[in-house]
Length: 448
Image (cartoon, rainbow, N blue to C red; front, side):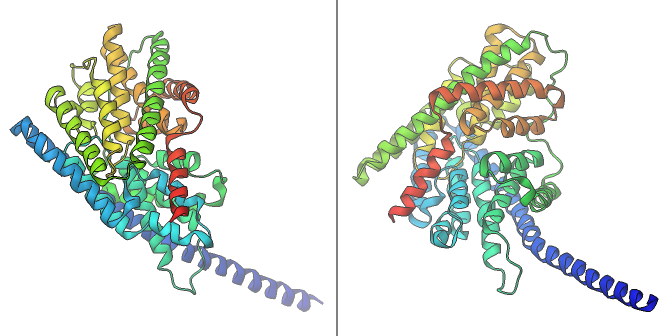
């Protein structure tokens, strides 16, 4: 009897060991595509950062050489950037985040061809080239949204390259994980990437893909840091010794920034609809020319601060004694985002939105005559509020700015700004900017 029991125990142990080993093998095989795609994403994000940075430096060089040059270089860059998109990858235009959200929604057997147009290797190449050329011309764009579409394309392509015998990996989860890794690599904000995936990209509970998204964010971030160093996107602004009553100023800035962001998005969408109604190619070319000349004119009269993504302006007002912008700076930053985005070239609104919000916080701080540290807080609150007004993702916005500055002790101030802005933006439009664009892309794909 004892020998029979021992035999049964040994067979059960062997059976369960075999199951455990098979599960480990299956888990590793399913994880390899995520690890590989994350590594590639980190490398391409570093390359893109370098190229985009050189392009912005080129725009600054031309401005300092002679501002008049912008009236030649800016239109040329706008036209070339738009032509590249139209000729080689039409769905590489704009930010990239709506395309990723649309791809997630269309990730089913019937939508394969449509997703291939939104996420592909040509999209990666065109996105980098078009946005960099636009940045060279002083276009008010960022590289963060494009990096998300680039990462989504990389993850999808690696998933497609898997052999038939490989354990199946969810296409939808692959794209979502890629988007999170792309944001983490672009901003060096791993928590922001994770929160972004949960809040913006999907309603699925994180338990279904938590391991994949955590490892992807870590690998992409470590790869970027290996080449760029363990940097903060903005640095360590001084936000100590804050006034007890600064919460009231935060609410005021959040209301203005949230409403301004939502109005800007509403204007962009209306202008895009009007532009899409134009049938004559010469009318479209004239519109692109007008957009480029507006950007050149703003830079000529408003200075270098109104050009490009605006990271230089953010660091200047945060880390120097010159903390207050001119009254027209927020207006020019917002106007520049509208005309650049609607031109039809590739480029994101993440960084420009942060800069617009920072300029609003700086402006109100000057009007209120606040101290340097309170001003820094309002600048960060404005960044969170404006980005929330665009994305309608308050937690993502607050976490991103928190990680960019390592200012954990002001988390309540930033969350207050995010929630206030989200509420105010809702009164302008119930739907987020990216959600409206996503639906437009899906309708456009169904018509083709």
